[in-house]
Image (cartoon, rainbow, N blue to C red; front, side, top):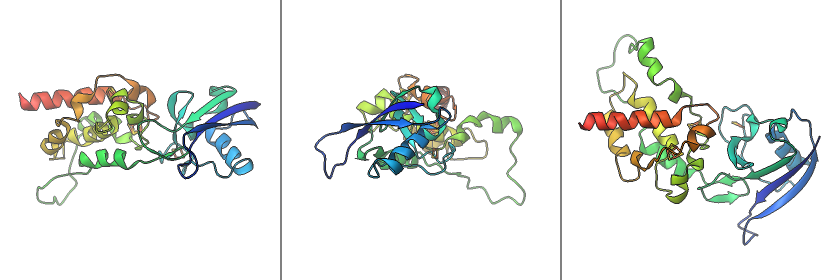
Length: 232
Ligand code: SF4
Ligand code: F3S
Ligand code: FES
């Protein structure tokens, strides 16, 4: 089928402002949007720039704004979008070139919530046992691939880049509700700061954008309740 692809382009070394490039491409309806982007890059314009790696919704590197919605380019088929395809970089992070944004502010927020296991007890000689029920409490939030689809679809983040954002809170949730971890107070302290958890206004954009179907807003509410409960 024939598709019309519009791509928001920007090369800070050459352009004063972003512009749209247009491409009419012959593709199969079962091609992924990433295949369409590859076809444009390999056959029409080698300067078109974007990130991709695994091609299978695992690495989280090819988040784009696709017809106004954050998606992974490798996870959407042409037939699910139709013949008019608009591609832009995800919002709220500085554009380096075309679809490549500076992910450092996003990863700074991730690092701030201490995304690693903390437990100062003497090392056990057997496994640190966790029941199936306890493991299930944070199962959803272990699935994050750090693609930034959630944070860059959040209207609070668009207006305040200092907001830690849903991805950071999801990853804090993963450890806060891990029965073996002892870093909850430290993490809640980070989340309780001025640009932390309370900036969330339950807009739900993040939940709708997540390619891993993580119930993000629910996770954020669970962390809010944990913070209130611990302070009470
Ligand atoms: Fe991506 Fe979902 Fe993780 Fe957000 S929570 S970074 S949308 S995988
Ligand atoms: Fe933003 Fe998600 Fe909260 S979109 S306002 S973090 S529910
Ligand atoms: Fe890895 Fe799409 S290329 S998630």
